[in-house]
Length: 203
Image (cartoon, rainbow, N blue to C red; front, side, top):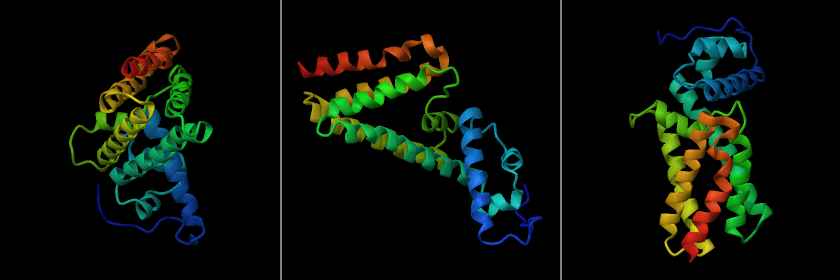
């Protein structure tokens, strides 16, 4: 693809209209990347669906790779907003906080159109270490693992890091099995299995 920059057709765009185009690109990319995968979606489809020109995209993002990384940053913000909602609802109770997230995940992962975790999907799509989308995903998963370890310690687990790894494996398994099995799959058992795992570490 040529790196030459062209003036968009709407060359009289004001500064006020540019954020609107950028936001349409962002929303469209989020929807398409999550539903279809990052590799499967090209720039042409994004700008067509967003109703903007290709130069509009490249004014906001240096490349599709950078747009993919931005999609995952947005996804991560949304993830932490949901994950942290349990802390507001159950202050001082790490187990209840975690179960609040797990209960919500059970509902989402047993829907017919569930596509798993966008961050996990990105790691699978980009096995190399040099893609900006993979870097965002890896940093997020490392932070999540640390959060789970801190929550496990707060629950009184004898081996909090071991419990955290078990909980993370349950999460990742739910993200995948929800896509494989849908409403009747093992994702519906997440809360029960997680509680049994936690109970076993507290004995």
